[in-house]
Amino acid sequence: MLSKRDLNNPDKKISRLRKVLFELSSSEPISPSISTNLPSTDISDLLTWYAKGQHHFQGMALSQTNLVRAHLPFIDLSESNLSKANLSKANLAGATLNHTDFTAANLSEVNLIGAEMIRAKLTGANLSKALMSSANMSGANLRKADLRGASFAGANLSGVDFSGAMLQGACLEGANLKGANFSNTDLSRDMIASLDLEDVILSPTQNALLWELSAHEPPAPHPPEPVFYLSQPSPSDLLWAGDS
Image (cartoon, rainbow, N blue to C red; front, side, top):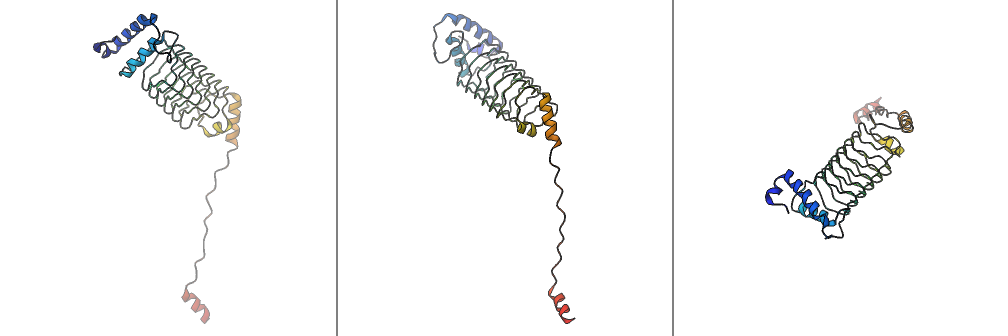
């Protein structure tokens, strides 16, 4: 296993980790609840090292991994392969997942709040009801992803490819959408009306709807006309009027 000196050396730690995983590849599974296309011993050891404070696991081959409800906040799985993995309801808040491959993965109801997912590949992934508020997903590929009910509030979505994605009920409030591609998505009329879609790529139909909504915006309300009230006559004025 890893020595204390190995744990303090990130490069040596990862190299040793991969070597240990290879050596354990013929071992009997230990945990039936957490498994991969490799023996489950491997992922169990990864979770053990994570629990001991080791969060850097870049470049891991974890395709088809079952990590349902896994608690892995702030883990670094950059450039790893998690295609077709099942991370439903996992906690990956604050995780570093730059250039990570989540193609066709199940990330439904996952917690990715504040995660860094620059240029992550999420083509065809299930992210329904996922929490991605304040995440940095700049340049990520979300083509044909299921994003129904997902929250991107305050996220950096600049340059994200949403083409063909399902967005019913998704929250994009306060997100940076500059350069994002929403062509062939199901952006609702309300979403188009409420979002800042400047510098966003839209389909011709979406552009027509945006133009229609802009052309029929209600005119700005005029300020109310000032109202002048006649002053009440003073008691002395009434007396003088009676004398006349």
